[in-house]
Length: 315
Image (cartoon, rainbow, N blue to C red; front, side, top):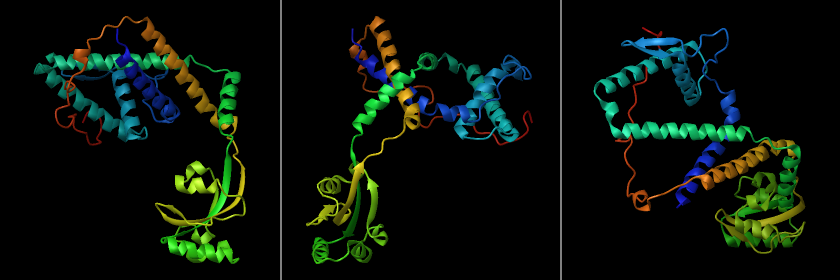
């Protein structure tokens, strides 16, 4: 039994769910298909009959919600008409494909089955994630663990950036003679911070290029580099002004990320337990294909029904 490929596939699905979870708030806030309520017709209501084939309102609502999210559009009568005419374009071209016998192609059956499996998998993962409700104690524990790893220093520094090493050496000699660092930076620095006396503000060394960061952390407040520091931007003379302990983010500000992380951890265990229970027999010789099979619409650019111009529905 070889579960390596299944593990990779499931981890990929988990990553997709992670992206979905990260966008969940946006999706909930984004325009969606008009929700059914007692004042609205049920999903089973026929919204259109095309060539004697009836299409339920629920099918169009699903299509319309996807179009709204994809277009990041507002729910307006104009967009409703546009989407409805696109929906009809899909209906008539799909009916024509059926009349030509295209639905009998085996690859279509595989594509439909794969899509069904993907939708069911997503629903299972969403349901499992919804059932994970970390306690305040669990969230605080993760927060404390992460904050302990952030016990680092922040640095406040200035720099003078020039193109040539010799120029940087001359500036260091000027500093040795008592020249003011800020005034030299304003007069000579090529960088955008030059006009502000080379002020870089407070920063985490990890934000800087390695060569710069390695030197900054060796300086003591009030000291400047005695030799020029080279980076891809040029030659630097660096003055360290001060250091302080990095201020950690508040628990409330990172709480959503912690909850999402705990949900991902729970989902990993959930999928892992399903794999352990599953009886899987793989044929590695068949899995190692040189090229994946073509799916419907993969030949050249994907074809879809032409976009409709906004016009009154049914006209």
